[in-house]
Image 1 (cartoon, rainbow, N blue to C red):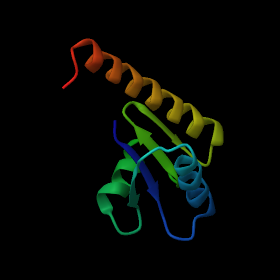
Image 2: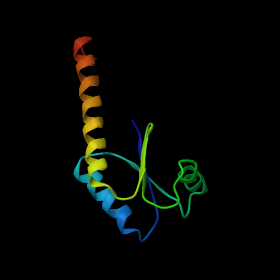
Image 3: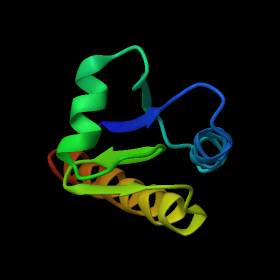
Amino acid sequence: MIVTVFTKPGCPPCDATKTKLDKHGVEYEVRDVTTDPEAKARVQELGYLGTPVVECGDTHWQGYSPDKCKQLADTLAALQHRADLAIDAAGGW
């Protein structure tokens, strides 16, 4: 699943969110709402006015939330584990 962090320069909560996701090994793409009009529009579509906004599938939130970062990391790890088990059950690649 693709994880997107909508951010802007000089945003300490944005930096903290990226640091926490890095700590948990979550790969993500960064979209700067100050230079990317589509990113700004997406944040507004989701109902938010500030950054950071984290989006992954149907899950999204605004603001720095260490608990949500950890929960996202755990969910992604579980999904990856299930995918690995399915590949093993099918005889590998």
